[in-house]
Structures are given as C-alpha cells and as structure tokens.
Image 1 (spheres, rainbow, N blue to C red):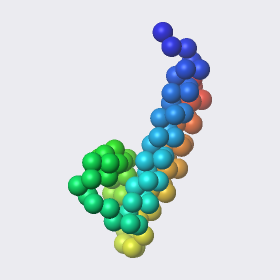
Image 2 (image 1 turned 60 degrees about the vertical axis):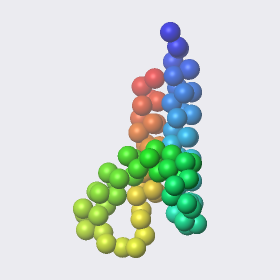
Image 3 (image 1 turned 90 degrees about the vertical axis):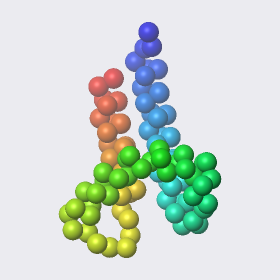
Image 4 (image 1 turned 135 degrees about the vertical axis):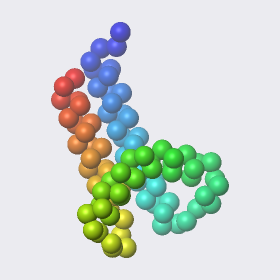
Length: 89
C-alpha cells in the first residue's frame, strides 16, 4: 500500500502534467498546427474536458470577447483544487 508521501508526489506530478498540457495547447493555438497530428489530437482531447466547462461558464456569464480566458482560469483552478486535495493527505 502506498504511503501518503507517494500519493502526494503522484498528485503533484499529475497537476504539473495537466498544467503543462494546457500551456502547450495555448502555444499550439498561436501556430495553428496540423489538427490530424496525433500529438496535437492527444493534447486537445486531454485538455478539452478541463477547458470546456470553464469556457462554457465564461461565455454563459455574458463575455463575448476575442480572448479566450479559459486556459488562465483553468490553470488557477487546477492549482487550487490540487492544493486543496494535498492539504488532506
């Protein structure tokens, strides 16, 4: 059975991977890569379940701007949620 420090380390690494994938997706949106590239598809399918609810909330509140703030808010939320979980371990 894994001890608390192992679980804590695994959760910290998972949060870093999620944050990294979100940042890579932002960078990819600037260069418009081939959408059929398997790496691009993996990044999109991995981050979309995190970004879509935040995007829906932002636009549901009436924001109609050109800048998509969902990655920024998602990064803060991922960090906040993982920090809250790590406090209990």
